[in-house]
Amino acid sequence: MQANESIEKSKIASLPSKYGKFKIQVYKQGSQEHMVVMSENFQTLTTPYVRIHSECLTGDTFGSLKCDCQNQLDLALKFINKHGGMVIYHRQEGRNIGLLNKVNAYVLQDLGRDTIQANLELGFEEDERDYSVVAAIFQEFNLKAIHLITNNPDKILFVESLGVRVVERIPAITAVNKYNKNYLMTKKEQMNHIL
Image (cartoon, rainbow, N blue to C red):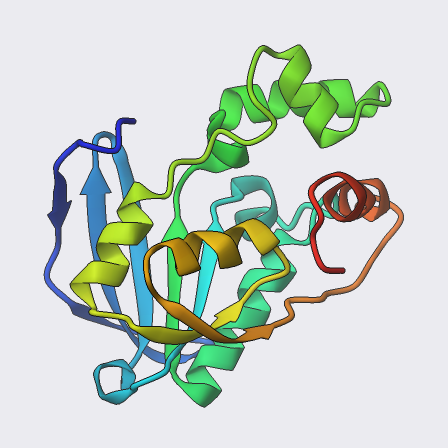
């Protein structure tokens, strides 16, 4: 996906969910479709809570214990339902290496590689994500200041590079288990996540 690709967007629809009532909109860039999930009062907020959540089919949908993705998404949706804000569901599976390659990376992780080593061994960068669609979403909603729900310092720097003030970082800390312990240690020690 190239940063200069045009972006299409859907209209805004309602989404009643187990987390509460939301509004949703989809942004399409190339073959990837990203979703914005907003609290019903989002348009009235001057400093909303925002989470940029990277897609994880294995975690978000199938409940994989190898990561903390589903728990972080669950936390974010409950939080924005209560406090107001948005989740940008950034659909770039496996740090944008795709599902097939993510599963191949899982095989390498089963052999002892960490997530970064697995990506590199498969011929990818440690993180292939492109955030240009997120920048377009921030611009679309004229976001100037936000509370950012993240553990990732790179996402803070990205948001600030857009000229958006991060008023506060809200931690997205969830439970550690024997399957995701190494994954979380890699995030903390090699990717400088605030855990």
